[in-house]
Length: 402
Image (cartoon, rainbow, N blue to C red):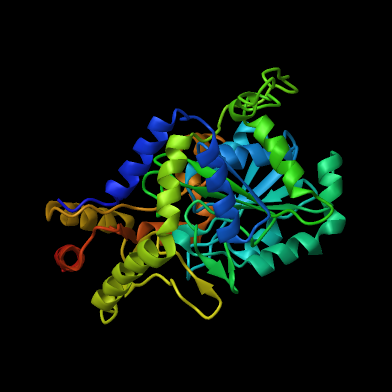
């Protein structure tokens, strides 16, 4: 069976994890702090906070910004449920919008139509590792400054809608020569087991707030907020005579461990010159295998302005129903090839339908979803296996659509 997306766990990673275990420091410590610094250098943002998940990062930023009941947050209907769930946790209202036909990302025109005086945050999602149109999205925040109603000092300091990018898929992607993480106010990455760069579980908040914010001070405060509201972490308390601490708020517990960071440091070291190289080769081979068949819509992963990070290969099949897509997936699995679908749109989920959302209000989202199949992409997927996947897809499509 060809799996869908197993992690790359080799001797180099195992050795670094063992070194972390033997160091005697396994919670947040020197490796986590070094990982944060290296991410900041890599992405070109101002400060980075590593946490135990991207979900935690998104929620922490919403709470830091003071998002709560009565507020609205704009996001695409085409995303994973975590993007919406964190808004619900804060008591705010998710305002779903439709996506582009070409690339699954949030429609800028739909964002503009959704902005109201209640809008506090726009959360674009870089689907499949493909960056959103950040210049246009950032410009919307500036354009509607006069409509923004600040409810606290942080919101007054920004003076406009916060752009919080769900960059869970897009670590290493670039837009107009700049890496994700440095494209808007705040970006949040995921290092979950199936991501291009993994720490088993984990995520990072890339702070890139404009003046007059002091990103280093925001980082220090978020370190406290994500560790129970405690003003010293375990590393700081190990210094001589520095045991005493205070709790300044009822915070959360979502710090990253040094064991996780050990994996991340190796992953980052070889990310551009090894991981992304191989993933690009797999993407190119898939595209070569399907490009002459007019039944398929191939994903975009390179233009003059954007370079994706080859996270997902979302193949679409023209003029099919959701039911036909599901039959095609079954036929592919019957040939011992694992595939997936990204994602079932959030307004289709029972919880959100129960709140009154309907997928019928997002026709392009449903259209893209109903004909999409995500193909396997992982470092150890060799060319022979890529060709096996291509043959399995073609066989399944021919069988179902004959």
